[in-house]
Length: 145
Image 1 (spheres, rainbow, N blue to C red):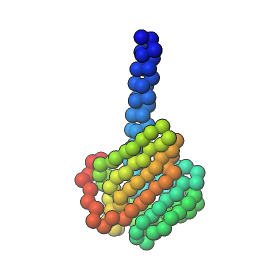
Image 2: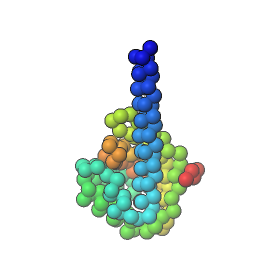
Image 3: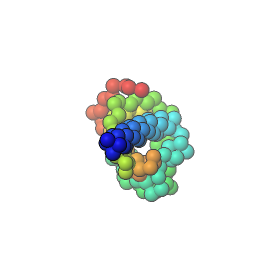
Image 4: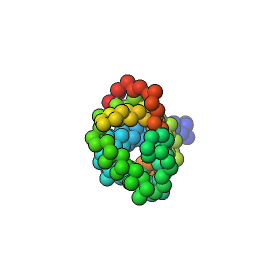
């Protein structure tokens, strides 16, 4: 009986922990999108783990970038060319386990230009290790934030 009670408590605790990890990744993703929209390159960069990768697919910044210096350069160019942006975030989907989380969302940034993005972020230890920024001209977003 005691063994079953312990096992049930352990499973319950792991479920709560998974839920906390799950919520944290979505919040981190929203914060990342907001920092991009604000043009706050320093805040954007705080989200990345050492050795992170950014894959920008489409548009003038198309390419793969590795490490802080390269990624900072991309975001500085983007912020400089766009200025402050209005942000629309569609439904955020997450997959999480104890090793990390993947967050995907449809996001539209609007300012000097409309930039529709299919976003995929991979987090480990609460930091972005891989980011895919896919320009998707057909994308429409029902705002949820």
